[in-house]
Length: 555
Image (cartoon, rainbow, N blue to C red):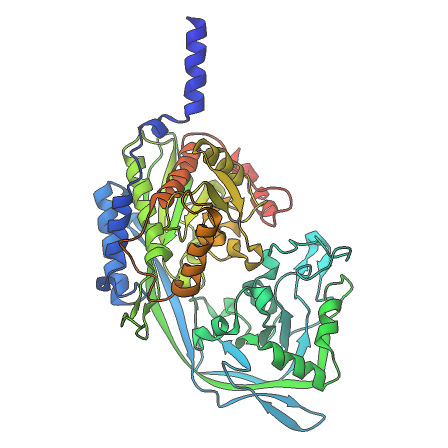
């Protein structure tokens, strides 16, 4: 009897929580129906602040109510307000470099020589004779013994940056090699970090030298914003110092430096050394006068929850973004709505399925929160607004699990890991994937920094352990066709449909692989929701120290 009891207990432990044994299967039919609805013309591309948002928010709330979830938003409601600043630059009155020694001007063509936007709610963005300072990679990372600024004052100046990390182009044997992530971008390599750092130092403008290899996309993507920008509405004292922020074309930068006797190629090499010091572009200033249209757009996150039975203050959070790009120019088929069927209506559908499974299972010990973010496509703004004003304390948020673009080409023998080496959740991913008969493949282009380009990152910056499912991060090893077929799917989607009108629902979709990934994330959340376990960050992660500051709250 003792033997039989011990064996039964061991089998139960291997099987996982009781809910894992009773949860209904993730339904491909349900996923298809949700995506087909959200990506339909009725929702007009789901752009924030439009009739499409009103219809989307109403639809989300209706679905969540039907699933039996509780409101998880502000003051017992379903939503969290997210006011957005929307700006658009008109044709510049003046945009040029001035060389004092030659008393001449170099006119700059917006979208060709330079691409800028603003997050200032002003009628005119003005930069008056501001000196330019080359700051290398513009990294301040004391934990890595790195400081590109060396105390140089940037107030009222234009900071000129290189993209990516100081060791991105380093050869083996260089002292910087491996100091950051090598070909795996850290947050210090992201353009968002560069602008944030420039603002922290009081710069009036920031320009990043465009490099396709370093940023992961061409100039066509850089200029695709058309001079528009979105940001959160903040009080004046918290606004960025930058009047203008953006990019300078590689060849324009090369010539600008060469004209004053500097070699940008040599400076790139110098910027890979820890003793690099900023270099002033002597005699060169930026002059800009650009009219700005600006408005405040009212948007909303949608949140729902399942309250935990034992530790309801501890929260396991799932996230997906409901927004897409709205209306645009007609494509070859005459479609005007960039409705994001995969990006991220399929993620939204995945959250509905996970919630349905949890509602059909025993009540979890911890609370589950399902967050549907606005304005991800405008810069992760909905999730950032939440992270700045969290409804559930971040120190008691167990994890954030994000779904953002799942493959639609069938079952896979593997799962794609984004952000290898960041946190312990990747170990859970590998263990549970193995139980599915799958292996883990690391993202194939880590230099693109996908880990920093989805909504989970807003929570990571506050120290919350995160995991992202984003299947464009690498070629899945498909059951039918292998890696080659997986790469073809990635290439077809990213090359043709990513952020375009052809990201539309199609009856040819094979969602068996998406079902695998959604079920995997359900299982990870299920384990966390039924245990006292606190996942963490691994040594070397830039987020570990942040989480540790709130360790006392989790004892």
